[in-house]
Length: 451
Image 1: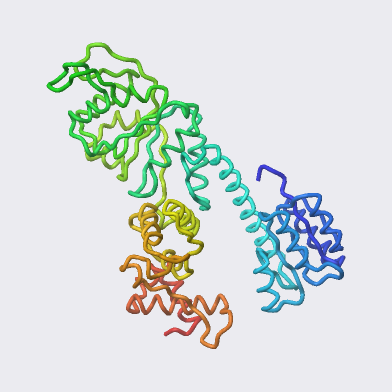
Image 2: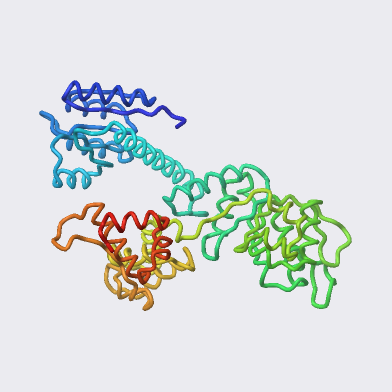
């Protein structure tokens, strides 16, 4: 991490405190420590820490109070509870209070190292997301990309870096992932943001019409050309031109576009004078662009001219942690547009959406929530407001029959049992669904006596 990592360790037992501090300092962390709960609160008032490790049972001020105050002051700071009095109730209370993890004494040092590293990684991601959200605020809603997904966060950071240059960009991704929104993000983060952002879908025009749209025409260039008209390339001067579905552009038109990219000038249809332009090109496609080149349906020289930087947006199915965030965003958006006082969305709805693969990606999710807002007459979106094919979707949870919170082993056993049943006891198919090899599956079957 580029910034110094600061940890606060709180434990009223001197030996335990010193051992923990010694281990963490050896890992290269900056560590502050105290045996006093009240002193821990004073330190938190003065300084922010990336991570707090606190004993639970302490006099005057216990670990739960340290946890509560830490979360009040610094919501992004992670807290790990350490105690010799481990019970299910205290674990639940700590996790509900916002603790990242709960470690029972006596603990293994390797476990502490691992959990601390994971907690710090989460803290860093929160800070990066916060910084990114602040960055996005500068666009005043022009290019809102809603995400908490680490992969998407890295993509947006890369897009922000690319935006500072004049390099041409190709955005790849399935339909509905938000390619045009990302193009707008790049434009608004660039030095061209005060210039125009023009866009066109290359797949909806014939070659002649596309040439007219992109390059414009002179008066009298053809029947009906009663006046001179600028094309989108010329209109995007000192700005950005977004070419959606560029792989659908006819080969003849690709040759003309290549000339514009090379010469930085455009010739109107029927014109005789080249017009200099200063335009940044951003293209988008839902296809494998290199594969289209191999099929000789896209010129290789144009590929290298326009694909200086490639940004690939992952499908929604690969970033499901964004679904709850997007659901809330779209719910507020359409509730505002329809003047409805919708405050909530049923947990069952979120469960169903989290278990759905979204072939239509973010656009499909937005349509589902817009539909829910339109149909509800109350203050909440429920399962009854979902499309019929989604209402029948099964959401599987695994719990002990006797009640109570299941252990991780209980969850794993129940889940493997369900996958085996769903795959017709086909071990190869089940292993593939679980994301493990057959040998690992056999070991788990033996471990849980599932044969």
